[in-house]
Image (tube, rainbow, N blue to C red):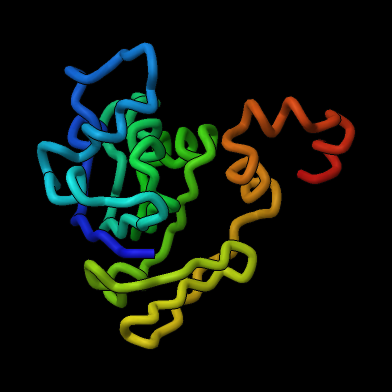
Length: 166
């Protein structure tokens, strides 16, 4: 996976401008994500790439469209020093993988080749031959991401099973 890197305090209006939504097909939003602040990403990011961000990614308004737009880019994950709380929850709810890591930002450069193991809590930077640990995601969050979001996850889950998992 190729790494893309952006700085601190990227807000939801910068992630996706309100001029681009609502749309009948939200999958179109990916082509506009970050277009006003990181046009190179918008034009060149490929499916499976990873966005590395600084502090407070997704701050600003609570628009779910910001998380939807990032997922629609096809990236596999966003790794940030910190996320705005509502963006974090929105991302998980729609099945976008996100990781909080203080160390990743300083140990991964743009264009580095990386892999992520969510279960082990490990990012491998093959370009720099470094391993970066993070707190592994809880199993139920991994399942939500794998199912494509909370709605799909809950449709397949028995409520008794769900309360046992939490």
